[in-house]
Image (tube, rainbow, N blue to C red; front, side, top):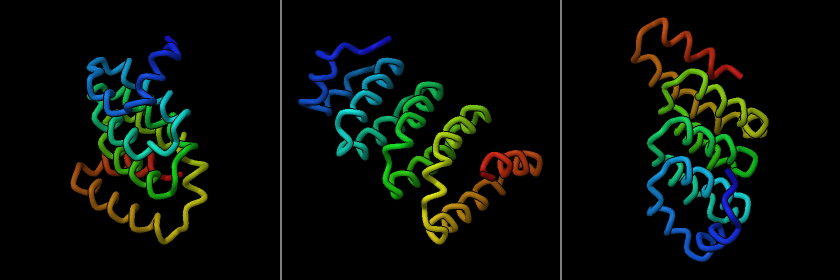
Length: 137
C-alpha cells in the first residue's frame, strides 16, 4: 500500500501528527516515507518506530532506516533490536545494518557488544549461544 503524497505532505508540515496514527501498518509506512523525505527527523522517526507495538511493523521501519543513519543513531537501532524477540525479525534488522556497522569505529562498537553480551548472559545458556550467533556479523 502506498501512502498518497498528499497525506505525506501533511506529516511533513507537522511530523508530531504521527502520534495520532493508531494503526501500526499505516504508522510504519508514514515513518518510512518521512525518513526518505526529511532525514533531519531521523531521531524522531526512530523514537516513533520504537513505539510501534507490532514487532513486524517495527522491524520494517528499523530495517528501512539502516542506510540513512549516523553512527550514533545506528547504535540506537541496535539497542532497539535487543527488544525484538523473534529470531528472524532480529536477523532481518541486523542484516540491513551490516554494511553501516562495518563503517563504525571498533571502540564504539566494543562498548555496545560488551553491554549486549551482559544482557544476553542473563538468559538460558542455549538462548545465549543462539543470540550470540545472531549478533556475530
